[in-house]
Amino acid sequence: MNGKRAVIAALVAASLLSTQTPASSSARSTHEEPAGLRQALDATVAAGAPGVLARIDDERGTWIGTSGTADLDTREPVPREARFRVASVTKSMVATVVLQLVQEGRLSLDERIGERLPGRIEDGDLITVRQLLNHTGGLATYDEAPEFTDPEWYGKRTYTPQRLIDEAERLPQPERGRFSYSNTGYILLGLLVEQVTGHRLSAELDRRIFRPAGMTRSYLPGTERGIRGPHATGYYLPAGGETGAPRPITRLNPSFAWAAYGVVSDARDLNRFYQALFGGRLVGPALLKQMRTGVGTPQAPIFPRYGLGLESVGLTCGERWGATGAIPGYLTFSFADATGERRMTVSVNLHRGDPGIAPMLLGVLDALNRYFCAEPYEPPGRTNAAATTEAETAGAAPGVGPTASRADPPSPLLTSGRSVGGAVAGRRGGS
Image 1 (tube, rainbow, N blue to C red):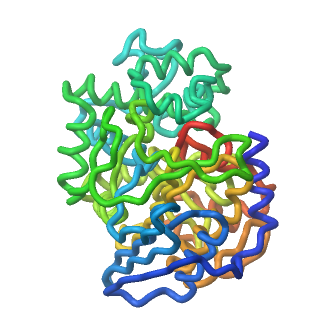
Image 2 (cartoon, rainbow, N blue to C red):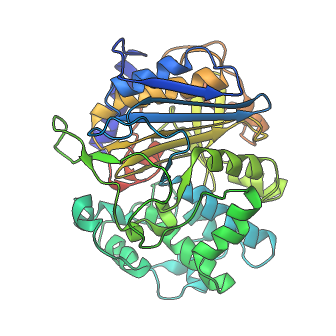
């Protein structure tokens, strides 16, 4: 937790953009380039990312931009259609499947997980499906176990879902009813989907999410070590390796991530997903409203709220909903407006779990803000009269949002095995 607090402190203090120029920058578009967006991507690379990819899709067309390199040895550019491990953006997809089962009358958000999965988790008769979805079930996250210190070690092993749950049960448990990010909860939700449907989670994601949304480049890999299709080399900096060279870690056995953060996709498909979800094609309006009704997080005001598989980012013009992810090799940021008509996804091919991530994260936040708000990002603590309440359109209570939260003290952010908003710089595993 101290590492995450350091990240927020660094974000508040960091300058917006570096003046260093990266090795390469390119863009392709049927869409006018938003002012300052290329510079924000360049700043992300100047801050330490090997490479970055951004994609915008909206009524004006598509804009794709890259900066830096896909591989530090070959210096090849980042592929514009690069696939990557989306990490905790997976949670949005798994949550959508669960909400579809609720919509079909096959599940209830308020039923106890122990009724469906007896014996899988201690106190399962006290934890509801809703609490698993919004991380208030009082479950430790398994990736904090000593088992998950070194991805070069655990990334070569095969884990069953029950083994991951067992690792979490050996850890101190957080207070139930309060937000505490837990990958363990989403492992249980994956098992729940399989128990209710009688099918593998990968098959349900394909049938219910990927095919209806046109996500032809997306899949849940199981134990498959490589990434199908064009992709950048993924890198990570190990704990305590802040001054060392990034290590490649593209190939790994992702069974440790599974329903919590295992999906492989690309920016086009993620934008298609949030268009379909927020456009009402995957769940009905009442359940979508619940997905975007969030509990407060320690990551406020940068990532202020977490709903049912969705998190919000606090920009200068209000909150946008979507998700972030961190896994050894990649960081992902994917957000959309309330209707799903304006979408943006950013992928970075480096995961690091230390305060050095702050300037890199700031570049990504600036890129998101320049698209959604048409102005530079203002770090938390600075006032901005332009803040709006689009969050209310998406189901937020009045007064809840970046304007209200910015009066609060800075809070922790970011690690692996979690969403970036819950994980990039504090956890070891992913996000």
